[in-house]
Image (cartoon, rainbow, N blue to C red):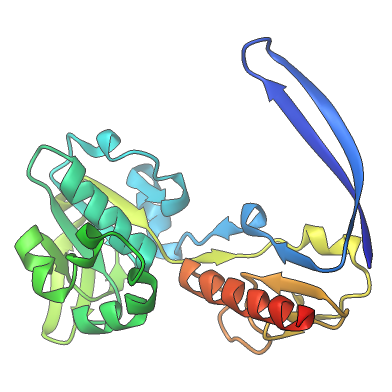
Length: 243
């Protein structure tokens, strides 16, 4: 049994006031999902181009790109695919989308198929055979950059583009963590600066973490794909515990 002290700030935009609400809640299970405490990955090579680069968490509306002709999306997860689709379908001006990913089109779709199953039909249509038909081109992973050019590497070869070719870059390469929340649960064991857990179960009974890099995971980047799978795992544990 957990007893949690919660503080919530309620803001009234009309009266321009805010007030603090405090309460104590009791729960049999606690799942720590630290999405708001994640920091979006910003690759070192992109630092040079940060004046025209946006992390995907800040992507709000395709209309802000309505005057752009060519956009580079770095990443091959569901977020990258969704943004590519939204940009193509909601901007009136002809738009070319370049995807930079270490996997080919079929591999990108295979990795995201289970996430696409419950999505609307219009998103399902954005599959490998439709990439080029919709003006979406996968140029492979970013191999190297300098102040003027970006070099991509794909199965078919290498491609060099001047940086000026792209009007904007959207980075969809996952998140790293901030563990400030875990200080509230000192019983959790920390290993290599990560909360130790076995498939989302921490060392504290009925306390779960989701969207956290797995113990032993070499790169500590977490994608939305992995967060979705973690949510399913935690849900299954809790449902079984009630049976």
